[in-house]
Length: 55
Image 1: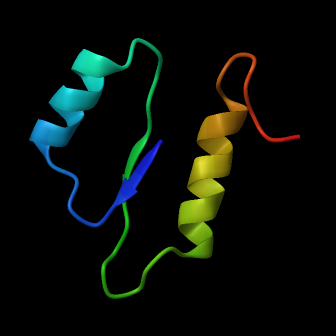
Image 2 (image 1 turned 180 degrees about the vertical axis):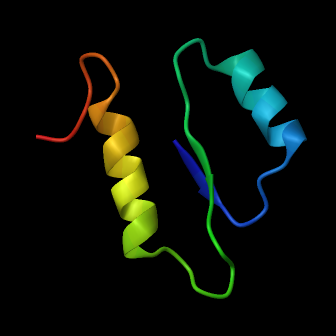
């Protein structure tokens, strides 16, 4: 999982090349910072991963 305010196609390519499992790259607004919506999106993504998720 990668939360960043400057996620680019180069980042996506790097993650795809170096991580065999699914990875979430989520852009965070640099002016607002991490929000409840970001946390909810991360939680939803984690809950959809087989054998993963939050307890």
